[in-house]
Length: 252
Ligand SMILES: [Fe+2]
Ligand SMILES: [Fe+2]
Image (cartoon, rainbow, N blue to C red; front, side):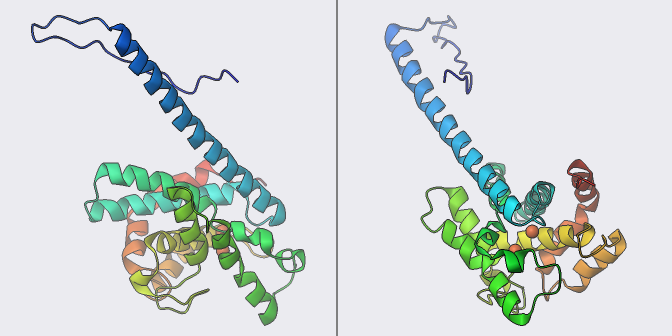
């Protein structure tokens, strides 16, 4: 469609004598091929992103609680928590950049498995019965199945986040009852981001909790529900977290 996806800037080489050497015809050919490959790679990345955004919009149509602003906030909180964790572990900035990119998309997809949950349960205005709650828990397994034929790092991360964001540090979570570092880092990070956002937002069935109460809840559950180290990371950037919240407000 003749879209411009990027600009490739190439600087002439300098000879040993400091003279600028002009591009040769064969250089032009190599550059042309390189440009085409780069454009194909960029286009592929764009298509992947677009498909993920459509999946998220589809999930939003099914589950009105899983709104655009909610998934954007969860993704932004999760990547910021990960950055603090990574600096603590002295992970290289290159690696951090790569992981942040992958985690952002995967975190947005955490509840995409709810597309497979029936409306009677998803939209029930009252409390779920134990059987209904069990059915609801399946959204983790349905979600991970959507990415089981992983073709990219984002697919792999999405498979991990969907299945592990309701696991608990003490092993009392679902669906697998994994515990501690047996739960993938991305799952432990998204669990904190998702719960923080759910508590601090107004939902049809509850008011937003005030900030002190939300923070107390996270602190009280550090080491039982949540990875205590990651809760510490989260608390250390609380101002940044609040600024993210104001960047993605819920519609009234
Ligand atoms: Fe969930
Ligand atoms: Fe969520």
